[in-house]
Image (cartoon, rainbow, N blue to C red; front, side, top):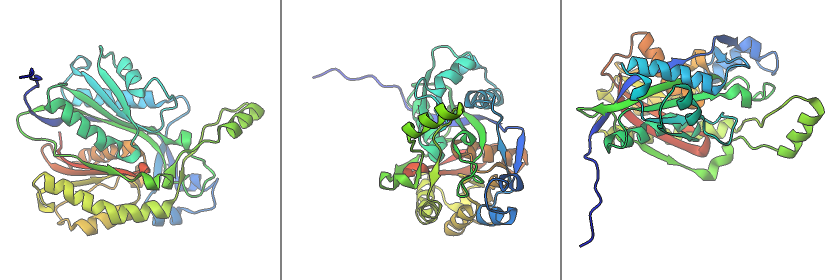
Length: 337
């Protein structure tokens, strides 16, 4: 008989702390319209966005992620010494390597943590929650820091009428820790790479190098999005995923208190709410109105907004769902710290 592989006993996990960082600069629709042919009324009608936050040139995603992480760790009643793994979700880290996660871990003073990035765009945060749940549940880690952070203004063309008004900057983080009872439901996730070009950041490096050399101004590739295709996909495909996340957690729409979808578009949120048939007792996150679309950061930012407003209370059940570039998606139910 061959030798057996030793494994750690299974245990439960939960969100033990939450923290965010919102840039100070508020950018109105009118300011956005100075560079695109649009209007405040059109932007509000098409997206629900009234204003968004833009980070200044000196603020990096490392700065924003570390600030959110410090607040999440403090909210959990822990110190940096208690964190043994960092999972960072982003698509706006400018370096191919090293990962943003290792740089944030170093900024926080962590000693030899496991650290890696996730490139799952708008679904990156719930992807990270699912991975952290597995690490804690099987005993590979005790307290896992999950961060969603974006500085999308570095990757958005301010003259592109289809994207300039949508994307913004920010960071949110949670700590996933052991629990005596289930605090995170199973993660339902997937992707459809056949539609990858619907949201893509595809550089023409030769053209960029030439332009950078001629102007002396360093420019990056920019995001391109087929808005209508993404809208139709999210509206038609994401409600069944959200329902499945409830079902695998043994819950129904009547059991939850909060619905926190990725803050992509208010019309998408409204369509999902109708399809899921939530009772009036369920509060729906609508942080997009003042935060814009912050991709991997949008769910923790929206969750924090509900908590700051006194709507989300410790122990409440929240259904999270992220969806976007990839096309990728992920959903799960969590208890609010």
